[in-house]
Length: 322
Image (cartoon, rainbow, N blue to C red):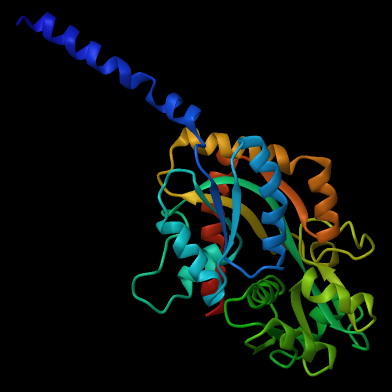
């Protein structure tokens, strides 16, 4: 066989491979899709997942199942998602624990890697927090609180639901950016961490709207500021921390859809396109206002560098906390 003849046969044999990726994407999906929620039913992240499940199911013409996997601070859900087949049929809705759990792992080998084990699909929202004090607190503004922490280093207390929680690290960021020091009081549950602020046993805490808004509306807590880049639409009179004398301050939990690493790019694009389109609807905007979360939409391509940035940022914050 001549060399020319051999090359022609090799080229002919390779032709079917040219269309393999588009063909695979056209077949997707051919079975139900599962979205893992690394939290309990009734939480904000669970509510967001369930909002997307129905319209995504209609768009893809396949069942979309919500699979709540609480336990170990979300570790069980994240590990299950990281180990799932990379075929687009398992997604996970992630928050800050995606980055924090590996950093606080006591094992010499972290349970998963936020960057290496997951493929970004889409960002749909951010969950800003609120810095709250007892309703009769002497601190009437963020300026009052910051000045007190400067005047009495280590004496002003703040609560959280555990070392490494969002509430803990939000306060770590605040102390770092204001060059102040406060005393961390750690609890095992969010409810107790908030209750002790209501009772005046702790000076302040930094929590999501789910944990504090009902108590604010009942006149038992007062919000000094919110931690996102923008004010809450539900409470437009409350300033951000950045507006309250800490320029550049921002601490919120990003809400991202992720897939297992090595999921085909064509499938990621299909999922990303549908999820971002749902996230840009007026219905989702209205949902965000009611849930007191910030609509923040990114497709897979835009989200990829953001994941790298978030991983580096939270690694630095955890080092500060330690």
